[in-house]
Image 1 (cartoon, rainbow, N blue to C red):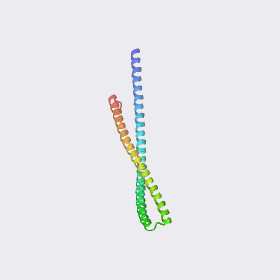
Image 2: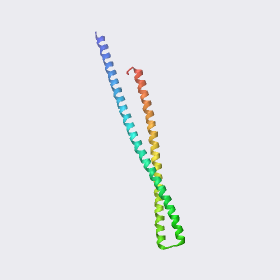
Image 3: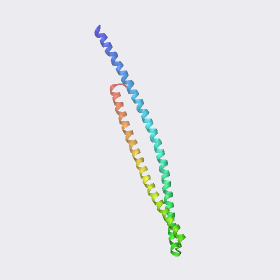
Image 4: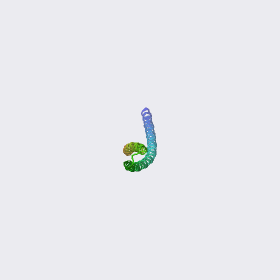
Length: 153
């Protein structure tokens, strides 16, 4: 009689452990799916924000280039004017325009540096997101294979 009770208790314990394992795996799968959904939402949001910043930075860069070209043209025209009539008033304004031109050129360099950094961040996020997605797919494949092997689907 004792051996039947022992077998019954052992069988009950195995079923209980099996149920707990299945519950834990279901909970882990649920958490993994929630994490993936959050990661996708964050990635989508960041991608949108980065694209907006990229667009604005490109517009600013184009505007800076246009301004720089206009200042260069104005500087050339003032140089010609100075050759004809080197008045102190004209020379003073020419110096101011030259200073502004240098500032615009410096700002343009900074803007291009920022643009390169944003491009690098975007590239790193893209590579990181695809790498993370591959890892999640691999983990999902391992989990699926484990549950199929153990018969706990």
